[in-house]
Amino acid sequence: MVQLSKELQAEIDAIQKIPVIANILEAIVKRTGMGFAAIARVTDEKWVACAVLDKISFGLAPGEELLLESTICNEIRDTGKLVVIDHVDKDPEFAKHHTPAKYGFQSYISVPIIRKDNTFFGTLCAIDPNPHQLKNDDVINMFTLYADLIAFHLSAMEQVEKAENQLKEEQQTAELRDSFIAILGHDLRNPLGAVSNSAQLLLRMPLDDRSKKLVSIIKDSSYRMNGLIENVLDFARGKLGAGIQLNKQPNEDLTRVLQQVVTELQTIWPKRSIEMLVDLKQTVSCDPKRIAQLFSNLLGNALSHSPDGTLVHVNASSDNGKFILSVSNEGPDIDPETLVNLFQPFFKGPVSSSKKGLGLGLYIASEIARAHEGSLSAESHNDKICFTLQLPHC
Image (cartoon, rainbow, N blue to C red; front, side, top):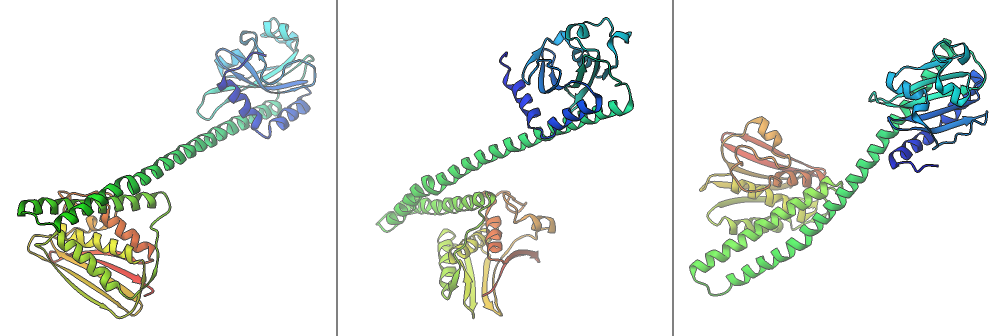
């Protein structure tokens, strides 16, 4: 047997995988009385048997070839039309045709198999050394129906194969993303932590004013870079399906957590004023680190996008089974369409388009709220914007 190309072998394998092929060939033989039925892959170079039912010892097995030019299927490939012969010797068109003479048959039927994309795959054919009544609607419709069924299965299998290949590609992409997350989580954060710690140590040393200013810039920049890395990490994890991971616990000291965030951001914006009112009458069940991250994103957003010299207001309360945290700042009113999109990843509205950042802070904040089964909303009116977090189950 001649070695077939990988593509041809794959097409033969595809036919063999169709579970009804054997039943189709058996039904053809029983209905017509023909002794040989086959499905052939016909290209512009080859005729190859994909599936065979041979009861006349024709001697052709799946994977074996006939000389293309010796077959009527070659002509069908050009015309796209079926060929039916009841009795070769009495057929004016095929009585002297070279194919019946070469292969010794008297009756013949072959129907083209056309794939969903209208490309020619091959034929569903049958031959027999004796004459048979084939030129009738029942036989022709049966062959046509079976050819269409084979084409349908081929298309379905191609779609499944494409889906499986896409899944493999997505799995490979997911592995690359995991590597990306690992790089962010280790290879970037660790040296960044060293830079931040070194800057803090330098600030404790006796430095002139210019050096202190430069070291403060290094410290503030490293803090901001760490925040960006944390947002990207959370975004990547969320998009991979893991979502925001929580370590919820009753927090009686949430006031200290919120105050620490204010203190950290106040050092970055020393000339800005932050007014915080906290009234926690009930213990809040939450992940304190995630609430600190959410609050830092909201407060940092407010400080970045409000005019210098204006006050940023923070209110936190827990009562009646709810924890409410709001951050408000002055600034131009935001239109409703922009407000709706504020919590989308990478979105930068007209207010923030000139500001630095990835556009992930508010998105991550909203995901943290959702992980807590809470909500994060935004309102804008009278030249003020207010973000409000509401968490149940205090």
